[in-house]
Amino acid sequence: MSPKNVIFKKMAKDKSVGVYMAKRDFVDRVDSVEPVDGVILVDPEVLKGKKAFVQLSCTFRYGREDMDVMGIAFRREIYIAIRQVYPPIQDREQSTHTKMQGKLLRKLGDNAFPFFFEFPDNLPCSVGLQPGPNDSGKQCVVEFEVKAFSAESQEAKVRKRSTVHLMIRKLQYAPENSGTAPSVKTSREFVMSDKPLHLEASLDKEIYYHGEPINVCVNVTNSSNKNVKNIIVSVDQVATVVLYSNDSYVRAVALEESGDAVAAGASLKKVYTLTPLLVCNRERRGIALDGKLKHEDTNLASSSIVKEGVLKEVLGILVSYRVMVKLIIGGEVGVELPLKLMHPKPDLGTNIFISICSHELHELNISEVFKASLHSPKVANP
Image 1 (tube, rainbow, N blue to C red):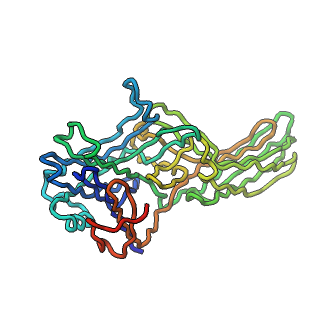
Image 2 (spheres, helix red, strand yellow; image 1 turned 45 degrees about the vertical axis):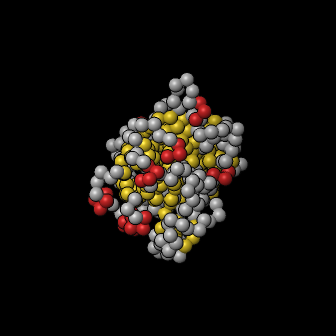
Image 3 (cartoon, helix red, strand yellow; image 1 turned 90 degrees about the vertical axis):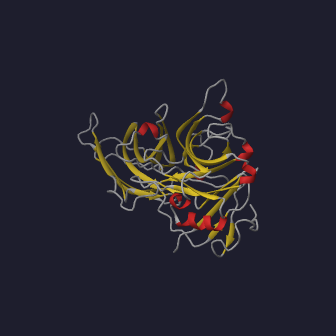
């Protein structure tokens, strides 16, 4: 199937600048990241001699915006890059990097100019910690944004009416080659017992997709004189905020307290099935979620895959998952199995959409790229 083509358009309120982009999701393949490209449309009559700029930024927020008081900033710019697009510094052909940019430039005319950014390889992915039911405002989150604006210079004060903000996401998909299926075993000896208790647990693979059941094979051989009263199996999410505090938040995102018992001298072999889903964790503060765009839902955060040699301190929030198996015997005997929870690389359909509202993004079905004019399309319902 051919790729899904998407054109997003968003204009400043004063019509001085507008942003056109073919996508808002950019894939981090660990060794490289898809570049951010698009086209800026300007109106020289509205600009009245001002310049037009485009900016790519990565921001880490760790508090509500209304907490930015007394000079205390609860946000940190991890990365920022600015390009001047008008008046153009470079020839349009030299600045055009993709076929979609070329199509847009031909359609939009002489007042359209391309832009292009390459991500550094040490930036985090779009992720945030879910606020509690009574929390308001933005919480702990890593966000990416493309911003276009007009001003006398890039250091000058910018009017809101002359600014366009378009949120984008940096995502990782599951690698095509999975590692070895996790397996672990342990033994516990007890006072006044001649023989130990053996516990073995395994998964059928290393990588699971969001929404996919996780089968945990548990094998208990209880040769001791102790009784196993219960077996608890959970999928834990570990979200580590590495940027400013190195705090870790461990949350069981799927849990089964089986009630299974294993008497002294007995054994048990059983497969437990757990499915970690956001729908079961929506009210819980501190659950890490993949970044989302406005009016879209999201899912539990994907596992973080970090390029070797990159300093983890600049990566904002790192997410990992593990299966925990615990035997309750007065105390606990437990094992841990690491796994990755991610999205597969998408197989995109053939539908084509154009976003066409001046201040809010909406989508319109059409049968061919640019069949409808980008200047005066019919507006779809939000």
